Each structure stands twice: as C-alpha cells, then as structure tokens.
Image (cartoon, rainbow, N blue to C red; front, side, top):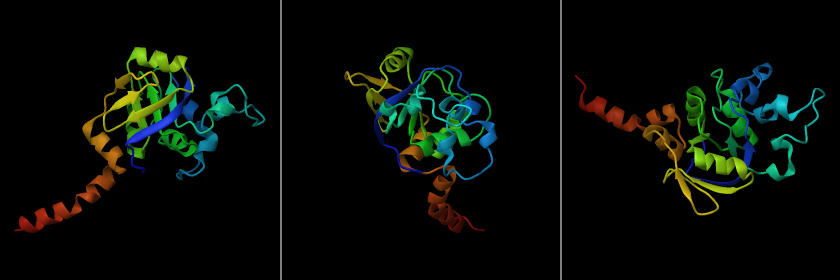
Length: 192
C-alpha cells in the first residue's frame, strides 16, 4: 500500500446515487485474485457499449478526466457485495480517494484495507463538489480535511486505526508485523 498523507488532484464527478459494487466492477470480471489490470473493467457497463467501444459521454472517457485521482460520487456509494475487486479496480485505474455523503460500510472497510481513501463530507460540501467537476482539491489525511479551491476546508470522519494504517501505508497484517519486536520482547520477558 502507498502512504497517504495528502492527495492533490482534479475531481471526476459521478453524481449517480446508490452505485453498487457490481456497477463499479461487474461480476463477470471476477475471474482473478490479482489486482493487476482490474482498472480496465472499472464501470465497464457504463464506460463501454456492447461492442466494447468507449462511450464518449461517460465521465472516465472524457479527455478532461485524464489524470484525475479523486472521484466525487453520489450518495450511498459502494453498496452491494463485499467484493474487494471494486476498490482494487478504482486503485488500478488511478483513483486514490472517493468522496461522498455516504459510503457503504463494507466498501469503506475494503477501501481502507487496500489503500483507497474513503471521504465522507457534509451535504453542502458534497453539493458544491457535484456542481464543480474538475475542481482542484487537496485531501489532507493528517489534518482530516478537504481543501476546496475557494479556501474553505471541510472535515471528515476517519477512525484512528484506519487513519494510522493509511498514513503509514500498511494494512492490518502489516501493522501487526511492525509490532513483532515488541511482541517478542514481551514474550521473552513473560516466559514461564
């Protein structure tokens, strides 16, 4: 996992509400446990027509979306199944953060465990972001804020352990492994 302290990027805006994991990463692509190349199937049914040609009207296919790493999504993003392929596909495509007013719990957890930053903002901030696609943002995980181009800052909730893991680029297992010297010292001290 990459260390996340700050993410600076223009935004992609996908205003649809209730986007589920099958829309993010369709089930027919669940043929691998490798994360490599999953970005090609991200939003496949929306990005491509029946012949596999890109739909020019879809946000990821627009030229102005190139290089954007922050996705602003409609409310209730990531519901449905618990497939980790959904955050994997977003990351493989180049998305590093998803912003919404609500993100499904299991998707939120899978995102954090895989290094995708889920950001839940208030309704006013969300409406501003939806109305300003391509806005240049800075998400500061250390300060737990989103800086808008007009100078406003919006805070967002982040559980302390999840924040620690993202700031240090480790998952739960990586965190436990980093504690191994202390665990071994404790075992030596308390051996009977």
